[in-house]
Image (cartoon, one colour):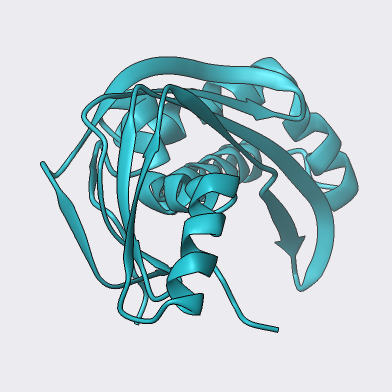
Length: 198
């Protein structure tokens, strides 16, 4: 079972655009502006307008789907699991079964970088690869976490601001900054593992 936390907005495309339909449109415009299609069409040895339009639409759609698949709650959990204070508390609860540690992290930042890509195939042959960059930064005012059995079992984070930058081949397509909200208190079921005994 995968443990997750619910955020609003929930995914990178919603953080960036609010309406995910705009992601493919913005990417299509950026691809046109950067003349990336010329390179791809050259590799495919195709120059007709129908091919160009279909290619742009397919690459833009695939690129926007990469954003929609990036869950903000998962990025936050990954960042929190690296914090020393939480890992120490997890170890203590493993060494003392049945104990619980309450951990407070004052103002802190989590940065999450991603480098997905889209490969373009024509008649089964790869003709190009389009590289993307997604940078997420979360500024969290306070985190209170309940740790037990080596796992984060619950947390409360009253305020968080997230910023996102999305680029294709080094060219910035869009950026945004917005508040993120959580459920008032998140209960994480069986918890998020932080500590493994060797």
